[in-house]
Amino acid sequence: MHNIKTYNQISPLGLNRFPKSSYHVAADISDADAILLRSHKLATEELGSARAIARAGAGTNNVPVDACTEQGIVVFNTPGANANAVKELVLCGLLLASRGILPGIDFAQSQNDIDDHAELSKLMEQEKKRFAGSEIAGKTIGVVGLGAIGSLVAEMAISLGMKVQGFDPALSVEAAWRLPSKVKRIENLNSLMASSDFITLHLPAIDATRGMINREIFDAMRPGTCLINFARDEIVDADALLEALESNKLGRYVCDFPRKEFMARNDVIAMPHIGASTREAEENCAVMAADQLMDFLENGNIRNSVNFPALALDRVEGAAKGTRLAISNRNVPKMLGQILAVLSDQNINVLDMINKSRNDIAYNLIDLESEPSAESLAAIAAIENVIKVTLI
Image (cartoon, rainbow, N blue to C red; front, top):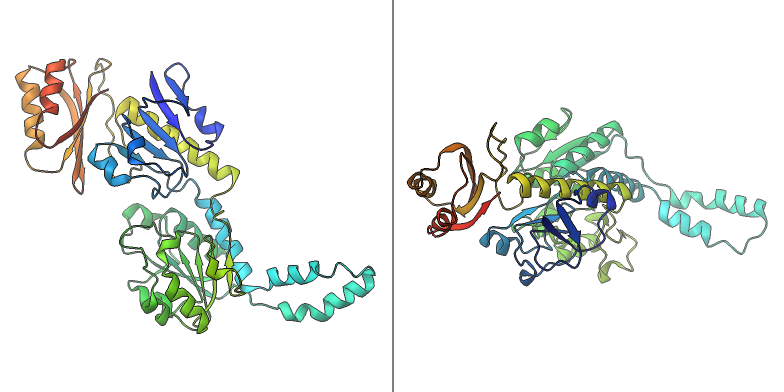
């Protein structure tokens, strides 16, 4: 029986993925094999005996990832599961920024003291010019970050008649295949800023991206540019942003992260972090997170981890149940040889195996012809730089 501890409200569609015959899923579990959460800020002391943590969402800044890596705990996220929800909100942001929609609504609703319909209609016709805007067709949008969300935004913008250019120094081969051919790749962020009417950010909050949109970047923008940020608050330097707004270098800021400094500004549209707040996105994230946890706990396979390498090994035909070893270790030389030497000394035959590394961590899946003894497992665990040994 696998024990899954939950935090937050997880969609029943995700929770129902776990077979009740082999999984116990609850919020009050103290000895969990895995943790499933959304926005709960997970403390290091809450990790307990967990082998894996799944975040039902893209960002993992609420999970102590470094501490998890040190303990051999695999941290999963669900990239792409909420991509459509964010894409649709980017479209909303584009339209709100380019048309006088919000002030027009506010004006119309403020006329509730006019009872005569003809008089109200006449007033609306007289005043509508105050809320005129611009169409987005024909404008240039710069997409910063061309992953699951960014590629969908690029495709949407093309269908709306926009010119699309993108910047992503860490673009993967898989992401590149997803990109529409009409997207113009820009190799320099400053160049993208200088040639775009709209900029939309789709990056994670990591050391390399925090404060990435700074004074230098704002200086490179053409006057009146609109910046859209439904990614992470920390990507934008708030002081530099306010300076750019004050100088009219930045025409409009649309974001999902309200700040006190934004409250009285007409050139900022701040939403209450609702980018992924749709029923469909929450369901998609929960289902993906649950499936990834089950594949890991039952097979040791890793998909969409933020701290471990992606790795999957098909079960060997005829291999007895319970003869797979999952071993995490620090990525240093001669580790695999030492592990295999222990198995060889115990006359345990290896049927199949796979080994991959990511930065300072390595992960191994090894299918064995017979089940190793407790002494063999202890001997592997005692090897210097081995972090975790699990018999699946």
